[in-house]
Length: 120
Length: 111
Image 1 (cartoon, rainbow over the protein chains, first blue to last red):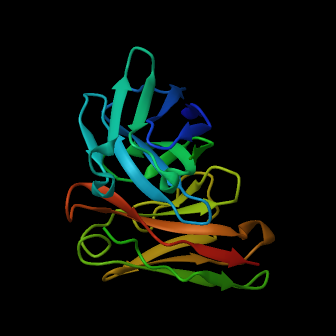
Image 2 (cartoon, rainbow over the protein chains, first blue to last red):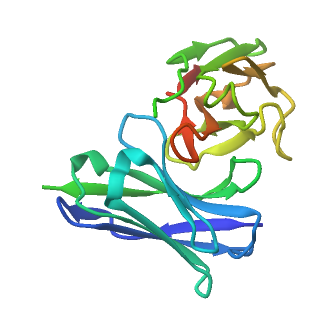
């Protein structure tokens, strides 16, 4: 059964870059069936899609984040990553990595989430 | 891209049925049958409950059902149980600007 686990620092300084990694187990990160994505939930707010990456390197990002977001997939390590630059307090959130079904467009498997706070 | 609109809260007694609406536009809900619903207990990972408007993943109770009419999708929970108390989010695929996913504002279900 596919499982996802996020890892990364829980505290990032304002204006720095937030970096998170998601490790995939129990399934193939190179499968054409899946996209690999990140979703976040700021305190007291709802879920928001950050972006998705495919095993071939193609990526799609939420336009609201502009050029601050970068995602990548490392098939050799069975990991995918998120980098968010120039963070502010508004980027404080619980970050979830997800497995999206490529053709049916739903988030089938979620990681447990990792809380990231941005300090001034 | 604006969030899909859900009621902030819905409540019901054990055994009753409730329905949560999710309103979007012709660029998302109205344009595609890629509506999904997620149950979220605070502190836990969200769980997929419905995909492609009305399909249930294995392991999800048949008390949960989904539908769509025009730009509005709905999630119905029948025979409400205490364990159903959670936040629920709808989501839709959209290509209005670039292929992406939009979530609903979230609904707190109280049993």
